[in-house]
Length: 113
Length: 115
Image 1: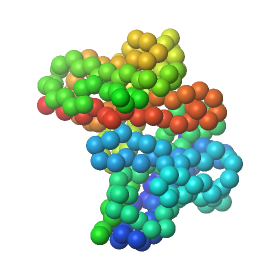
Image 2: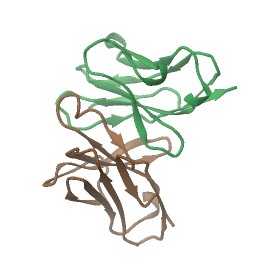
Image 3: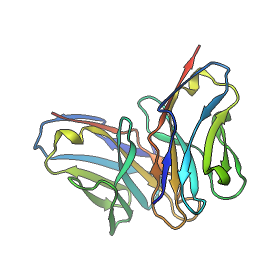
C-alpha cells in the first residue's frame, strides 16, 4: 500500500532561515509525488509535483523539492523563509496506475519575525 | 468567481439531521472528489467520481453518500449526522491524462459541526 509520512507536525523557523519540511513515501515503485500548501481558511493549492522527470523540482514561491529514490524521500525546502510562508504543508503520493492521491498528515510551518 | 465553489462554508447541525454539502466547478473537469480534513490526520478521501455515471468509494465512505448531478456538480450527503463527522470538508476537481489527472483544484472548504 502506498503512503506518505511527514516528520514533524509543527516546524518553526526564523524569518530568513532555511525551511526544510520532510516527507518519506513507502512504495516499491517510484510514484508521483506532490506538495500542497494550505493557507489559513483556504483550500489546498499545488506547490510542486514530481512525475519522473527531473529529480529536483522547482515550485511556486521559491520552494523546491528533491526526489531521492535511495532514501524514499521528497523533502521540501526554501532557502529563506518569509512571513507569508506560514501555512500548513501536505505531501501527497499517487502510485502509477492508481486513481487517487494519498495525503500525509501535514506540517504546520510557523515563521518567527 | 472561484473555480470550485462549496456551499455552505459553515454549518452547525444536530445529531441525526440530514446534511447536504454542495460543490460546483467551472474548470470543465470530469473528475470530482470529496475529502475530509481532521487535525493530525491530513485529508482522507470519502468519494470520487470520474464522470457523471461513475461513483466510487474512497477510504472512509461509511455514513456518507454522494450524487453527481451534472459534470459540474457533485454533492455530499450525511443521511444522519453524528458528532464524529465534525470536520472540514473539501471538494476537489482534476482533469484527465497523465499530467492533468494528478493536479487537484480545491474549493475553500465547508466546516461542519455536529452537536
